[in-house]
Amino acid sequence: SGSKGKPGSPVVIQFRRVPITDRRQGGVITNAAVMTMTSNATRSQPITRGAWIASVILNDPPEPPPADVPQFAEKPSAEEKDMTLRERFAIHRTRADCASCHRRIDPLGFAMENYDAAGLWRETYENGRDVDASGTLFGKHKFTNVVEFKDALLAEKGRFTHAFAAHLLSFALGREVGVADSLALDQIVHETAAADYRFRAMIKQVVLSEPFLQTPAANTVTTETPKSKTTRLPKATTR
Image (tube, rainbow, N blue to C red):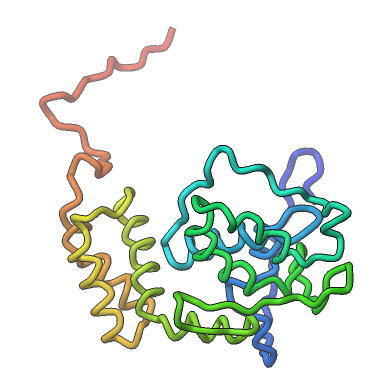
C-alpha cells in the first residue's frame, strides 16, 4: 500500500503491440514525447525540432545563434496575425549569419509542423491558414508531408547509420568521438551495413573497435587493492 513509509508491491504493466497503419504515427521523430519536448506551452517550435533532429538523429548539431539575434515573439503582432509560423520565421533568414543554419535546420523542423505542441495532428493553424510541411532534405530529397520526409530520411540510411554509430561509440568510450576515431567509425558502419543494418551487429562492432579495446586502463574501475598498499585495520574490541 505504501503507507507508513513501506513501499507497496511492484506495479506490473502489460504492454500490448498495436499495429500502425497510418505512417504519420509511430517511430521516434514523431513520438508525442519528442513533439512536446521540442515545443513550448503554447506552440510548436520548428527550429527547436529541427535542431533536435540535426543533433540527435543526424549527429550534426547546429552552431548556437548569434548573441544579438532578437527573441522570437510568442504572440504574433497585428501585422503577423494572418501569417503562418513559417512566414513569421522567414525574417530570421534575411540575416546572412542566420541564413546558413536556417537553410539546414528549417526543413527538418517544418516537416513536423502538422504536429502541434502536444503532438496532435493538425491541418491548419488557429488563424485558419494551412500548415505547410514541405521542404527539401540535404538539398536533394523533396517532400510535401511528414511521411515523405520519413522516406527521405530512409533514403539516407548510410548517413543515419554513421550518426547513430558515432553516438553509440561515444557512449561506449565515455567521451566525444574525435578525428582519431574516424577509421574505426567507418569500419563499424561498413560492417553494420554488411549485416543488413542490425543493431546487434553495430553493438558487436563497437565492442570490437580499436578505440574501445584500447581504452586506457586508468579509466577502468577495479575493486582490487595492490598488496604493497594494503592497510591492515586494527581488530575490533569490545569495551
